[in-house]
Image 1 (cartoon, rainbow, N blue to C red):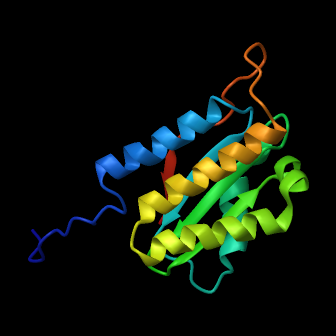
Image 2: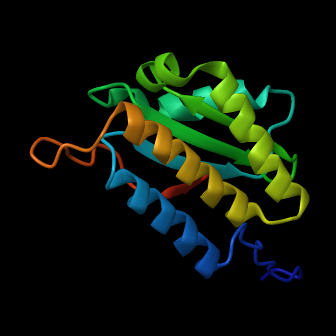
Length: 153
């Protein structure tokens, strides 16, 4: 028997916010062969957020897409760190300036404590870039990765 009450961990997003983010992913992926995932965790201490995003990207096997066009949106909520990691195929098309500009846009929302809105906006921006460079092919396209939010430590 424990003398300490059990504390329920506060979720990063409400159920409605999670559904908004998932809906944005699904809507974008109907327009492209690209894949978008979101990885959220509490902490990113002592590690560059882009390095942590890359680590999560490869752990989730996002490089396994046929056209190397997966994108991971990474957020460490308590440490207020974020990054966007795009695989080789999409990165060669859009470059560093695209990722940097979108991180800044996400930060604008985060500064207003609109985390889900910021992620939703960035998913839409990434989806537009993926659509421009990797349009959906209704005859050959398959969903290569789950459309979900991955919650880390």
